[in-house]
Structure formats: C-alpha cells, structure tokens
Length: 131
Image (cartoon, rainbow, N blue to C red):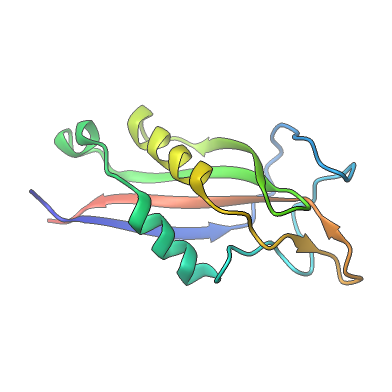
C-alpha cells in the first residue's frame, strides 16, 4: 500500500456562491482581519491530515487532484454554505466536504473597526498518493 500525502492550500475566494443565514446582510470576500482556524494554519493542516481518509475507490483507481471547498465563516465562527467549488471526483469531493463539516468554529473575520462580519473563504485540499 502506498503512503498517503495530502497538501492544503488556503485562499480567499472571490467567487459568488449561495447565501446562508448570518446576522449581517452582506457576506464579504475580504476583510482586514480574515477568519482563522483555532491555532492557525498549521493547526488546520494537522486537523485535516488527522481526519482525511483517502477513499479506497480513489486509491484503487489512482485518482488524485485538488478539491476546492468554499464556505462562509459566520459572525460566530461557524461554517455555512459549504460546497465544492472545484471537483476532482465524487469520492474525493465527498471526503473533502466531510472533513470541512467536522471543523470547529473559526475565529471570525472582522473589519479594521473591529466589526465582526461573515466572510467567504475557500480551502483547497490536494489529494496525492506517494510513489
């Protein structure tokens, strides 16, 4: 069995996708203080590496690639409107969605004046098999 490698890329998405319930009327794509996973990017990478299970069907068929999951971080730090923005395969997409749905609340995004606002974000998870 080949070892599993998973790489993560975090980016702000300016793509427009569906709405979710927030206390604010507008979901922003960029704010001065962007939402943050508890413990930062390295903690998020550890969380994802510990929770991702490479689907057997994808492993057996040598399917690999980068799944991009979009979501909104609400004012309370919870995630909503989680959806696939870039698909690789049904199984890898489902695994990426499953792991993002497991994530704890983020530190919410805020403006320069300290107003907490909902922010649109995206997370890219690269599925690779070593060897």
